[in-house]
Length: 133
Image (cartoon, rainbow, N blue to C red):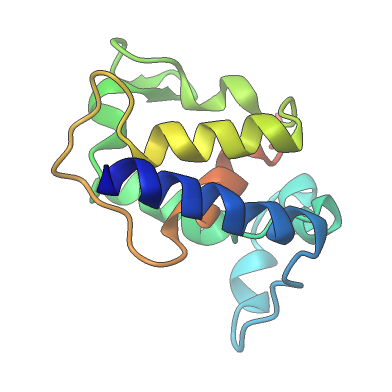
């Protein structure tokens, strides 16, 4: 029951963030953004609540074990959907649904991996932002 309530609260809290987004200004952040391809540098224009730079670091660090099952740019596991399959294709409702699946560790996801404050928004922002090919 607590998990269902927590997922509901997270989804309700994310809706205003999609409508009234955080502008993403964090001290010292601009230097890390300047090294990214142009579509990623313009992530604020997409009005996503998270920071794709931090989301990328979350996936690539191995801390959450994402690439054990998922692939990204052809690297990683094959037992779960590719993480880059949703780039720029999701509507706000689909983003909220994805957040719920990630929060609840959909079907076969490792339950020992937990998301800290802001990590969910960062991860979704990174997965949704179109990357330069």
